[in-house]
Image 1 (tube, rainbow, N blue to C red):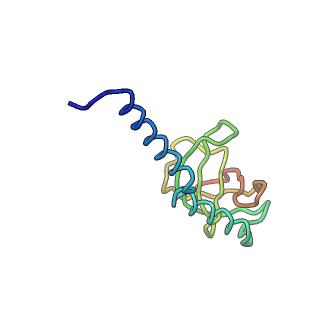
Image 2 (spheres, helix red, strand yellow; image 1 turned 180 degrees about the vertical axis):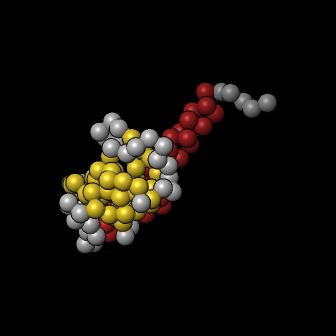
Image 3 (cartoon, rainbow, N blue to C red; image 1 turned 90 degrees about the vertical axis):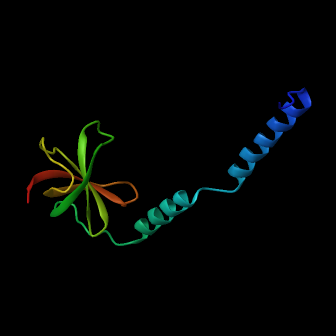
Length: 118
């Protein structure tokens, strides 16, 4: 049986608190560091798409956009494009054409509108 005196409980709580503090002070996780590195690299590179131009690419996923509607996500030369006004039945792996409408604030992705299936 494990003793449950106030001293033992206090020591256990203190150890847990020290563990949590050490994890927070050790900095971001490897995934978070890689995500930040990729984001910074994306901000420094030339954008491979132009506003008003139409591009063909594969849909990598469907997701809810900040606009509240479902959008298709794909990449043009590694550059993320969020495509709105997609038709029903569209699935990851489908190839679409989309017209670029705008860039996000850091120019690390673009918003587009669906033009058609490729």
